[in-house]
Length: 212
Image (cartoon, rainbow, N blue to C red):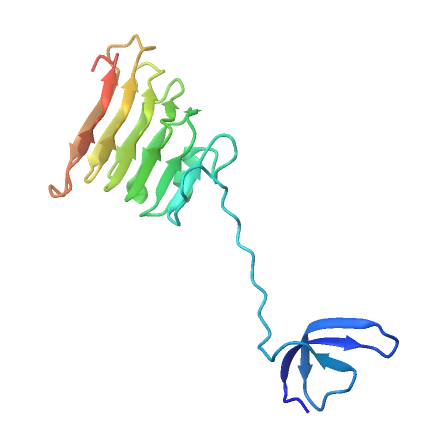
């Protein structure tokens, strides 16, 4: 006799037909038809398959969102990744492509890192005011991008309002295609720092061929 429980079993019928199952439950005395193959164990619950993250050349981490225009990453635009990002996450651009996007960080995008590991370019389209803008934002880091100013009266980076803990690292702003003297590499508009212990840091950055 076998006690009640769930078993992995193999059933062999009198005509030699074999039936296998891992979900047979014994509720009474067993029949001679069944041959128990494995030791008694609980029946496993089915596991829900998780979406596999794309394989990249850069080590992934749980709090990293990847971007690449060739479809090998989770997102093909930086804007889409910013929409999905949560505080504390990093948006990592893997390729060296040109992204014609204007990126604006509001208060809800605080505590985010945006990095271009292969020095992708932000090439803004005509008529936009800036390539990267900050408004009332804290604890945002941007590093590794090349910014090409391609519109008149445009700033590479613009900060406005209460901003603290912002780091600009290893950025190159170039305005070779500009004719306007009103263009600027980094533009501060009515800016204040509500927390002096979290300064705005600009390091290893360069501004080339931009009047201001």
